[in-house]
Length: 126
Image 1: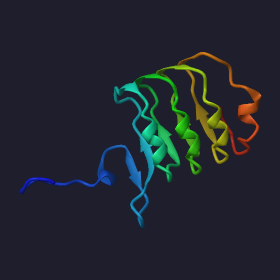
Image 2: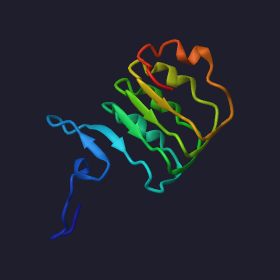
Image 3: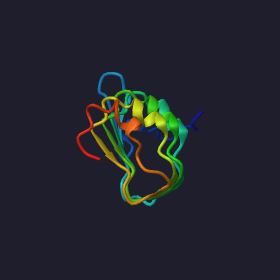
Image 4: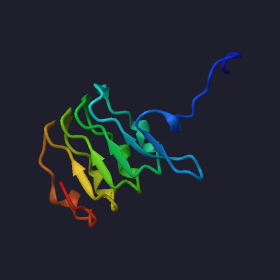
């Protein structure tokens, strides 16, 4: 619990976080160019109302968490210009509303397989 006199700021007011008005659910996480380091947390997969995930131009490393494939409302997945490695998880193919996918300028180990793209019917830009 916060101590007396501590100011509690809703996560919806944090820089780079946007929330829905009615239910205060995180709908966008936009943190490009902020020098984030380390791995992308699998816990981002718990943000089930997320439509925009922009972590472009940071120093993120490791794999893309397969848990992100459960983000059914995601339309923008922007991870370009990081140090992400390994293969793109097959679960990305579950993102049927995805319109924009940017994974450029990483060190991903495999090509994007056609099977991964077949369910991405809304995809406009890759």
